[in-house]
Length: 531
Image (cartoon, rainbow, N blue to C red; front, top):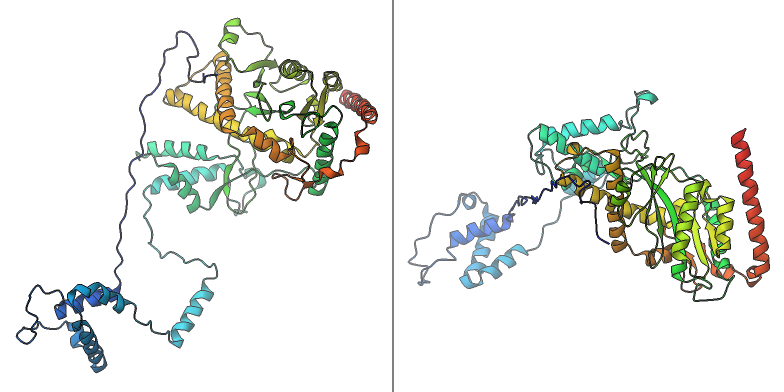
């Protein structure tokens, strides 16, 4: 499958690719030299004693000695005696041993500190409790883009209010999402206005460091206490191990092999918006996000992942009734399935369409384990009953635990969206700038499918699904305890799965009870909505 995101969107549309390659200029290298003071004294002393003289005559009696340096003339008697001893030592050696002389001269015994110097050092340490040496004022490399630094930080503060500013009313506090690429884009715009050269990415990293900023994950409210999450996670993994014993053993995972287990979930997607999770925030404060207007949902993408043999292509949910022409459908990416829904999000009908397509890809007469979260559209009783008839076991991740236990949320979607953003940037670069791209609704849908197809191809090449399934505990190779990286402190012990819990008749009755409960809950939800 080839990448199609840079292909023309229409037949009469000419290509406007930019083949210019950008190259970073060589960074300036500053070379400094530090000369020990002892070496300076030694050089002056060697000059005075003429140790490196080119004369072959070693007779000192007929030699006219130069005047000694002024520093030696002002020395006291003790210094003269010390100099005399040094002269005797230096004169006893040949010029060829000059390096050895310098080493002996530098490695002499260091003098001890006086009581006053020790007290001064203690006072300095007490005054500097941070443990870091403060840079002297005016020290370090000088800032080059001073105006850019000032204007860019002013722009940042217009998006995110200073948390230390207590004078603003709650309605005036800004908590917008500012990603690193968003910061770079604004920096390029300001630099163009100031007629500056475009700074490198490392400049923006130093910018954040200068102003006490860092990249952080948005603050998430824990819906379930962590001890309750541990209990729910244990029941989730217990259920997966139990259902693996309901049929004929086919391997280390009982009735399942790695190709039989999959995880499905959906996520909103913006066409050209920044897909990054981390955003810039002040160090030491909660990264709260409010009203990020540029992160509007253009569509919803549904991914289904397996440890091996990725058989299910991405599914895209567009908003609309689906009244499109054949010409548009033919231009969609070949590796993407498109579904239209009234709001561009998953519902019962689109979930049923997905399940039918999924069964066509995976049905081979063996049981399957279908892992999904507890979204309302996933829990339709008729959908679960239909999957059970097809020998598919639905394992539902407990509510409030998806951020810990769902593979797509913890690992895959972040990799996929990074590749999607990279593909979108490549498309924008081919048209010089985003402002010059004018697309119709039809062209946007076509382009979105191609970007998703490219991102999915790159994700499959760069992500180790088999390792990820093992790490999160969806698959296993033995009965050793399972610890989850995304849920610190949790440990599942497979030995707690007893033989008494593997009786098929009891399990069938339990599944029927669960289905009856799901139907009752669905009717109750419908009744409440009507009221």
